[in-house]
Length: 438
Image 1 (spheres, one colour):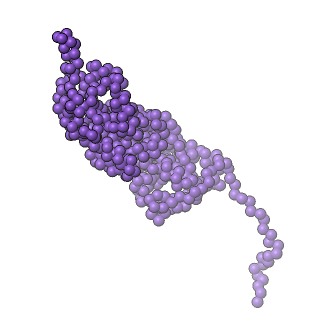
Image 2 (cartoon, helix red, strand yellow):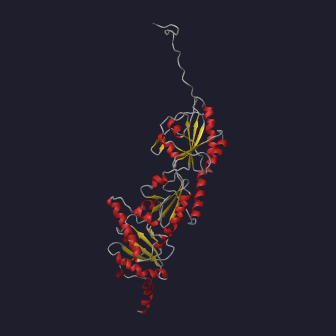
Image 3 (cartoon, helix red, strand yellow):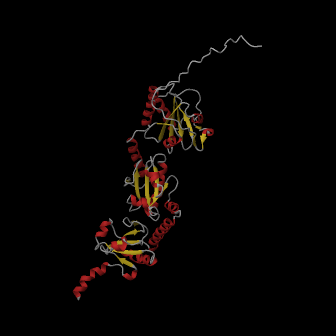
């Protein structure tokens, strides 16, 4: 009898909870059937019997089980005995609590909140509320509330399951994205630093934040398991892209990293000087830019293909020189967009004309100088230093809050000649002005 007691004593010591506590003892063999195949929410603690923090959690975990009775299932796993599950879920410390929601249970969310019954219950309440809102088809205000709670404001873009693909993945912009949880202390500490970095990088790199507890589809897509998780997205990223940020969480460190990544993006491609043939193409090039550079080139009748290409090459060289700046580049043929020329107060002084406009402020300044690489560089350098005469874009020639653009056919790259007018037969016309009928 004594031998039997000694054999079973270690198992009894390892068990923090009994069935009367309302906490299910999970094992490598019963986990799939009880948790993964369940239609309930599960809160699962991975613990070690020798862990002091685990022992401190015991009374609060028991209270959580009572609070959530009939609402969510509570389980515990002794990681020193059941070793397959801790390995599967990457458990690196004790205690670790994971939430297996009502959706895809293959990617649970780490609980990083206070180790109290109230903290655990609040997370389950939010999980249930979100599920009800999704199932009822109602418009959730969760993102708005969680944004306020986590400090998202100002230049930080609130991202969701519904807008992430459009704003980030199908975007020509560079993004830094934080995946957070409202109850996460580290996320709340990061918030003001994130906002500072977003303000400093405005117009160059966009900063966004996504509440991973409210928008689990995107979080699952990128395998988010801890908070905060920060990822960098280059323009044209796909659902499999997104580089993990492993640096410090101060604004200066975030800014330094963003600038470095932006430089990599810029150096990897040539800047395009587009022909402004439609409102959409010009807006796409200019939106969210610090400046948009407009070059009005002479008519093709005055400056044929060779002449025009030489001027376009000058613009491309200047654009490459300023590729680290957040500039958009557009060229237009003289007379093709009369409202745009009037908006910039371009008179009859001749072409080409170069104008630098702030898309956000709708203010502009015009180059006074030679149309050359050095001349345009000197002009843009003076603009960035706040020199030059700045004027408001003429509102009479705007369409809403943007330039009034008419759609035109793009240049085919060929020379053009004025149409030949046929000789007019004047034989039947009396040109003698001295004759007159009385």
